[in-house]
Amino acid sequence: MKESPIFLKSYETLVWLLEHTAKFPKNQRFLMAKRMEDAALEFHERINQAAHRAGAPAAESLAEADEVLANLKMYNRLAKDLKLLAFHQYEYLAVALDEIGKLLGGWLRSLRGRS
Image 1 (cartoon, rainbow, N blue to C red):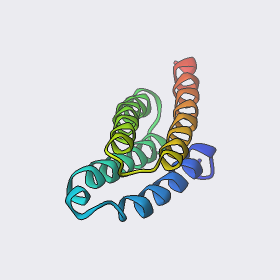
Image 2 (image 1 turned 135 degrees about the vertical axis):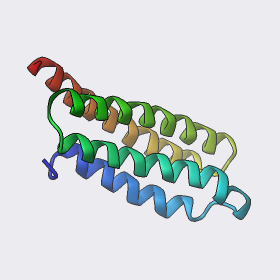
Image 3 (image 1 turned 180 degrees about the vertical axis):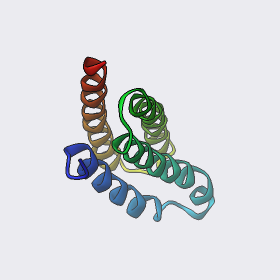
């Protein structure tokens, strides 16, 4: 399960995000950078929890991950609007988060199909 595309893509995105938020201006590192980093780490934690659970508890963890992912998408837009990320950086992250969302949705649908 750890080698599934969602784990690989979310880990790759997490690394990218941590490298880029470290370059935010000092006055935003403890606000926007922290929010984005916390959301990305929490997302990865939630899918890791889901991988170790079965049935309804796994679906619950994935639903929580989906909420966190929605927040991360909003933080990405906000970081672009505040000019903390260049447009191409925003675009890269938006595409990555969209791909992760599709993988997450597929996982959720597969769990709901089993119940």
